[in-house]
Amino acid sequence: MTAKIYEPMSRRTLLGTAAATAGLATAASIVPFGVAIGAQAKVRIGILLPYSGTYAMLGNAITDGLKLRLAEAGGKLGGRDVEFVIVDSQMSVPKAPQNTQKLIAKEKVDFLVGPVHSGIAAAMAKIVGRAGNPIMIVPNAGSNAVTGPLCASNIFRTSFSNWQPAYPGGKVMADDGHKTAVTIAWKYGAGIQMMAAGKSSFEKAGGKVVKDIQVPFPSVEFQANLSEIAALKPDAVFAFFSGGGAVKFVKDYAAAGLKEKIPLYGPGFLTEGVSMAQGAAAEGIKTTLHYADNLDNAANKAFRAGYKKMYGKEANVFSVQGYDTGSLLLIAMDAVKGDSGAKKAMIAAMEKAKIASPRGDISFSAAHNVVQDIYLRKVVKGHQNLMGVVAKQLADPARGCRLA
Ligand code: BEZ
Picture 1 (cartoon, rainbow, N blue to C red):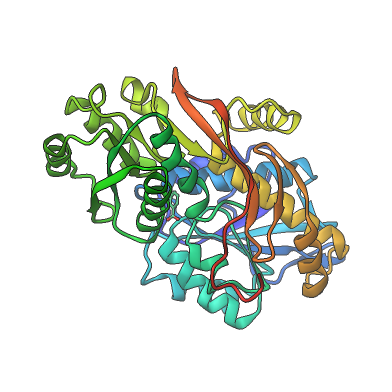
Picture 2 (cartoon, rainbow, N blue to C red):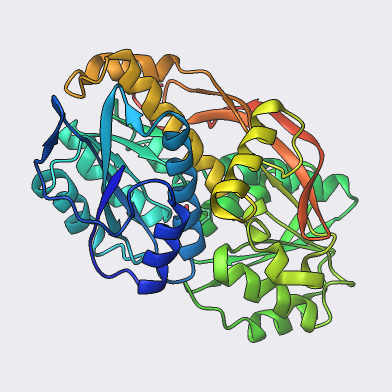
């Protein structure tokens, strides 16, 4: 596997990625477009993920998970070598159309993998869905619209819709006996949609959300919001932050003296991949997500061991999503024996895919969104420990999708 990387990516990120791919071609090596090695050209995978800013950890974990899965399969897709063309999304929605066009029209990638951010996902889906080409796999961004009104035959999602992990979370809060809650999230698609989903199940179960607090993305200035929560005195708080912002929020929440008084809940992104950095502030926080560290299945055990061996660090849900994206690419390219032009046959194989993922068994809905179990987890000594299954094989409602 080789990679062409567009600036800007920090040297630190490049070194991290290169070290992470030890044993494979280094991530920093640039392979000119169109080079054919052996009988066939390499399969080109365009990657649009964040490698800088608050979501950098997510982008790196997804990339690492994807590379691990392909390395396990001998570094080939359908018998062909693989080349990555990597672009740092910088979490910029305005730059998303240009970045997407660059990968499609200039780089002529066979597949597009990305993004992390819901706003970028919607911008990409408008272009890729309309063009009908290439096949795009979303390895994180939860924008409900991507497998709703913007769904398309060439767009699949291996991660979640924003509704999926959040909806069961509101009921968990009500089942714990809480009657009132405040929601707090970054003000953009992911935050707005996750808070709406959690609120609807909380209120359906008899609770009342007394205030929805929206924080500009990606601000980490929470003091005024925390003072407001302290004054409102809800029974519980339901929150969405992720990556660097989640570290800061959970630490600030505890430092403000709120942790022991008003329990924090939310979709698992609040602590996922960052609970060690959050330290004592994260201990005991209950969240809902499609993964838990200690899921007792063979795929998870092998995946976590392989990830640790390759990268020297623990896996998280984002690396699982990258890993499963690799599995879906393998299914598509194996079905057509490496003929990446056979789009229809690849899509048919992807629609039928059943994957024994580290998160448990997954498949795909008519809208091409992943169908999966949602777990209740609790942070114990920095680990996301399984407490139970809160939704079995949950499919997104896919409102507005003409494929569904
Ligand atoms: C999103 O923008 O869709 C998103 C970002 C980080 C974690 C989860 C969702």
